[in-house]
Image (tube, rainbow, N blue to C red; front, side, top):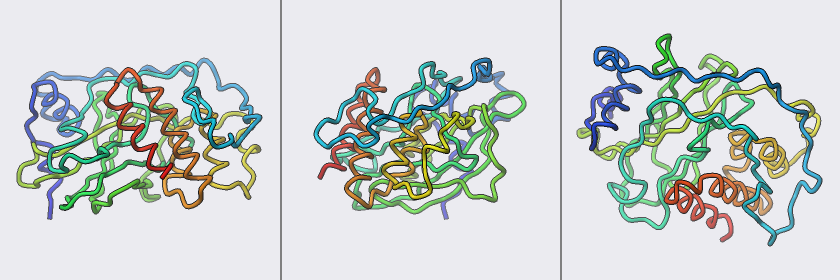
Length: 283
């Protein structure tokens, strides 16, 4: 069986990635090297404004835009802190040159938001003739501010949109703390340096005033996703339609991904990869 401990020692192609891997996967080694991460600064002075549901909660097909129709980022998003771990290429490597790329889904340059103390995370894996172990890892800052694994799960390789919800036995995540989540494709367990790893940051936030009342118990997955997306709650929105089982849910998933691609336009390759995934929902 693939050993997770191997991942903490794999060499990177560059010194920057090596330092990042040390910080995230081996805090003791990082401490010996004198490496630290600045703790995320928390801005709690401005409470969230009252939520106003969209006047047109389900845009008509054909008028999809990248101006926040489905996902509206917070007005003052918090940048991610410290070093990051992303290794390998989004396409190629052990997954081959596929039409779509291995991509974990969420804001990349900023800290994504969720209401859930046990969030659900979504990523995409391309079709592959050979499958590989997939590792999910959740990290939280320790007393020194170094991201440290607090939950790890080994999963099977599942092509397409995949979701993983943090199990209830994991202690509830607290609000206004920057967590990180990683997905690692272990291309060869005997050579961890060949693994593909991606990472994003997120935080748990209080529910905006009036949000709960705007989502009736009978609301469909598409309507819930639209409401969460309009409130800037990316993780709650995409989790609602990750496994789109209706045309409406598939349309909203496509719209969320298109809006996310617009948010990440400074990273051209990432934006294009997300747009390709959005097109899947339109087939």
